[in-house]
Length: 418
Image 1 (cartoon, rainbow, N blue to C red):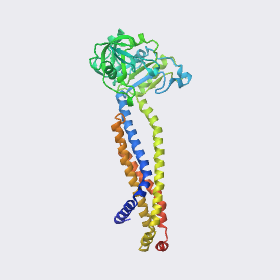
Image 2 (cartoon, rainbow, N blue to C red):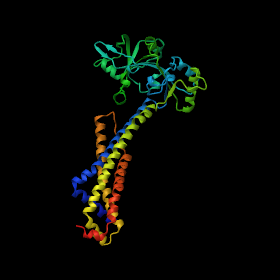
Image 3 (tube, one colour):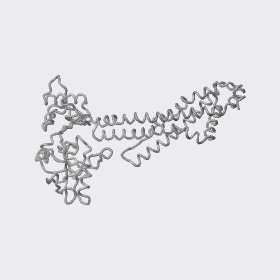
Image 4 (tube, rainbow, N blue to C red):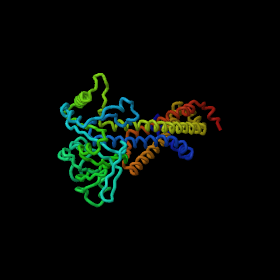
């Protein structure tokens, strides 16, 4: 097909759309819905994936954790052999320091929070904050988890830890709740009924998608935590691997040392977990997998409905233009020319719906980004191209039958058609 013929066929296709506006709009609706759902959901997931990766980097890409249970699981739903695992010990970190030369920072922390079935509250004057997470930490904690950075005052020191001092570092939200109009440093607060001196405030760092984050934490010396909350036995060990050390070697050292420490038989499985910072990204991929499948199903239904509409409008077009087809064949048009003409019209109709769907999908992504800043929806060129390809493919697939039917019409019959 020459360039002139291509241009002529495109103009005919556009004229067909213009002449039957309502019919064309209804035909395009399915394709618009399918492409819009794909583009908008893909944009949201793309933005969220970048956001999660940034959170992983902020957490520390070479920071690992040792826990009793797998990350993101409910211990009550685990098999008995996992539920009955021994607790980590306060002295395990010191053992790892002696046994693992490849590690840089090793620190233990304990947590008391509502998600663990425990409640906390902090008071100052008439102000009360209840929804908070209390964590006992060592001075090295901020090195292992850089997101716990100091904005005002100082972090917990080795002196605080060695003497079990009643000092506290407040998260940004907690500090604002207790001291909306004053400086919190040096003030004495009541933490679960006990007096603590505020020595620092953490930098603002909200949680994922409005959930609990650094802003909701209160940090106290681990030794003080151990003394005041002996029933909070769930400990976690964080350790970092320096860039010059091999990750695989360092992790092997940790696993071997913990197995010796916990007297795990050589033929038995580990009774602890070593969790990579990538567990957030892995968990997110599992959560979005179902969403991707659902979106694919919705978009497929939309595209099928749109494709049937395209086939329908093209069959009507073939019927309406039967005499035109006869005239074109009479003056020398080949079957391939007729087939190409109607196939091109079907693709043009589908592409129009696809382009409109891309614009609407981008609009939805932009609206989500503005209304929910924590959901940074981003439209990528890959998904735009995929939307174009999907709509064009729909036009080719569902437009071939009407185009082939037009190409096979008998010219003599066409010329006698009324």
